[in-house]
Length: 192
Image (spheres, rainbow, N blue to C red):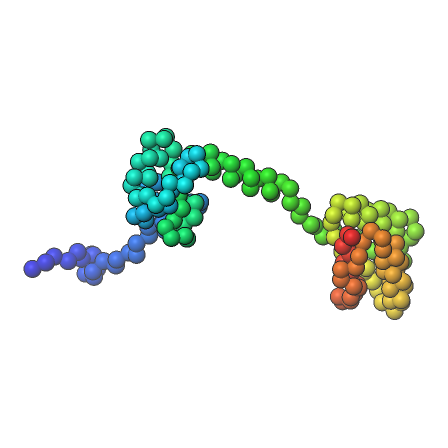
């Protein structure tokens, strides 16, 4: 006979599912003992192609040189591996990625809000801000909002947007033409 664990209620215990964390996916190429192929195409630390070599022999050669065996091209048959210092390789790859991130420019969309009855000075201040945004390489979203009875005179707002288009014609182009969204008109301009 076999014994069954019984709770105080007289029922068999509920088996909990295995809550082990998923295996960690390794980023980057396989190194040393992670290379599972029997035979590889080996490039030594000086960059000379050694031809097809057994993986165990290649790992021993890398250990003797004080370096690692790194899989460069896993898809080829047999895979191409190189003897190199993996720490230095990873460090230089991180530096290249950081440099690439530093050089890229993220284009933002800046918003400028206008009213149909805007005064000349206020308009000029908004235009200077818009010009600064274009010089920085950002797009500008112009929002023209109507309030109350201003909806009856939409032609004033249309003339204002045409004036904006003409004033920035040499430094910006219209990416999205003016369109109504409820009580406001939206237009997007991008730098040339």
